[in-house]
Structure formats: structure tokens, C-alpha cells
Image: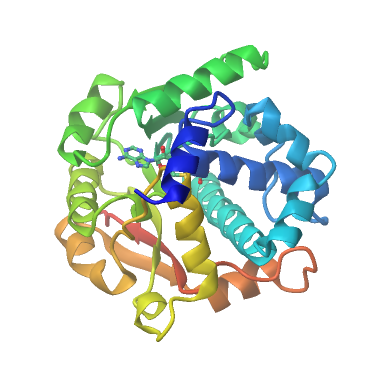
Length: 309
Ligand SMILES: C[S@@+](CC[C@H](N)C(=O)[O-])C[C@H]1O[C@@H](n2cnc3c(N)ncnc32)[C@H](O)[C@@H]1O
């Protein structure tokens, strides 16, 4: 064990750290954008600041986070990671709104929900949507406790589903026990989570999602393309993201690569509907912005669809 591991191993035990530091980082990015992002915002999450650990709220309020990032050389990583977080949520919630309107879809399964606050800030048009939040038991318990302490109301139609996704075979039973109806279409979102699982566990998770997905279901997920690793040097931004996650105790084995996704998706009964790479995502959501200029390199956002026969 190196000195960094010893130092950060100690830090991880301190009470100001979240059960999932990377979920905390994603919520911080949403909170920072809500408070300081240029209009029109890429994605607006007015609840994020309430859900982040109070110790970190200080980073967002006076923009200390941005200052610390500049000083440490991590500023570009922070901004690209923040843009990625915002863009993937925007894409998914736009899709949810469209599917709810067009198909009457009313089940939303967030795999690796972290501090996602959709259940608290949903627009009235999505009132009927039942939200199933799947994450590690400690992460969900911590989130529910934070919401209670912050005085957020208990949201209607939010069901926590505590589950370790590295054993994805348990997903169908866990969802069923939580009231999920596998005979009706749903939107499954798997955002910022694939990197936490080994490639083989990712394939098994896709198969498990396929078992729960009725025709007309949607699946959104973000993955990296092989180019991220084929270059002579792993791009600096990705390497730093991995280093930060590692230091705070979360390993990012990297998940499935874009090029490996087609077979497990097809076996699970999903057809690819759309796949947007970094240039397309930047053009669609970040064009002309000065506060956020790029998503993480080699990032791809995939929308797959279970066709109606
Ligand atoms: C980077 S966060 C993303 C959270 C959320 N999707 C978002 O975009 O804000 C990754 C999430 O995956 C969850 N996660 C990681 N490994 C997991 C596992 N084996 N089972 C369940 N959840 C897991 C973490 O607890 C964390 O909440």
C-alpha cells in the first residue's frame, strides 16, 4: 500500500465523505451549475445543493471548488466531468419526458442513482412516473438520511432499491419486490456507473435489464470508446478522473467499451436507437458556451430501445 492509499484510506473514514465520493462529485457539479452556470443552463437541478454534504456546500457557494481546481491543475478535469454529468442527465430526462408524453411510460429505473434528485424536482407532467433508485445500500441510506436532515419532503413515487450491481442477476427480483412491473415499458438509465463494474459484470447487467424490459422500454448509458485506451498516453483527463476515484476508494475498472456493447445489447433484446460521441454531444448541448466547453474525451452516450413487435 503506497502512502497515497494510506493517507486517503484515513480520509475516507472521516464523516464528511459520502458513501460514494463520485456520486457526491456528480451532485456537486449539478449544484455548481445551478448556482453559477450561464443561462440557459444545460441541466437545472435546484435540489443538488441540498443533497450534497454540508461540508462541500462551501465549495459551491463561493466557487472555492473552481479555485482549488485551478490551483491543483484539475480545473479542466472538473469542467469536462461536470459537463459530462449534466449532458447525460439532460439527455435522459428529455427522453423520459418524450416517452411519458408519447407512450404513457411511467416507470424510471435509475441504476447507480447516487444523489440524483429527479424524484424531488420532477416537473408536473412527470408526476405519475414511479422512480426506482438502485444503488449500494449504504449510498441509498445515506441519501435518504441527508434528504430527511435537509427537510426535503418525502417524495411521492420514489422507491429505493438497495442492490450491489456487481451481482446483477438479483436485479429482476429486487425490482419486482419494489413494485416494478416488468410487463410495462420503462426507461432504464445507467449513467456514470458502467466504469465501476468489470466488463463481464456489465454484460450480465445488460442481460438483467433485458429481463426486466418490456417492449417499448428505453435504455440510456454512457461508455468510453476504445480510443481512450489505444492512444500512446491515456488522455490526461481520463487518467486524472481515475486517479481521483482511486484515491477516494472507488475503483473504476472501466466497464464495457463502446465497441463491445453491441452483442450484449442485442442478446438482451435492445436495438441501438442513437449513439452520440463527444463532438456530437458538445455540438448539441455546449455550442457557444463559455462556462463548459467539452465533455470527457471518448465519451459516448447510447440510447437503446426494446422494439415493440
Ligand atoms: C459517478 S456516480 C453517478 C451517480 C448518478 N448516476 C449521477 O449521474 O449522478 C456512480 C454511482 O454508481 C454507484 N455504484 C458503483 N458501484 C456500484 C455497485 N456495485 N452497485 C450499485 N451501485 C454502484 C455508486 O454508489 C454511485 O452512486
